[in-house]
Image 1 (tube, rainbow, N blue to C red):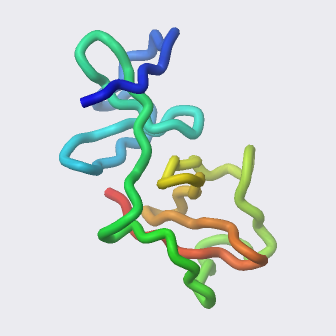
Image 2 (tube, rainbow, N blue to C red):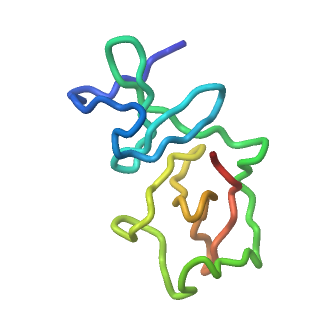
Amino acid sequence: MNCNTHNGHDHKHGDNCGHQAIKHDGHTDYLHDNHLHHVHDTHVDEHTLSVGGSNQAACTTGHDCSSHDTAHKHGDNCGHNGVPHGDHVDYLVNGHLHNSHSGHCDDHGKVS
């Protein structure tokens, strides 16, 4: 496995570290400052959720975003954790990925 090392990271991720755990590709990563951090040996790697399976990247016009105000716009400092997903960033809302797209919110699937 090639490493994409997050340099200068001194926080210890694990159970009860204060960061949202996300399971994908057979392991657990931690959401930290809109990055997926994976503890690997003596360092921390940057990961990205793969597009596919239950986390597609297609447009889902008509997705019910009633879990937040329809005027809400996802982005930096919107109050939701950013999750790297394929070549973009989605936002974690009540266990699933929201992606702002052309004036609506796409559903890019659930995460656990």
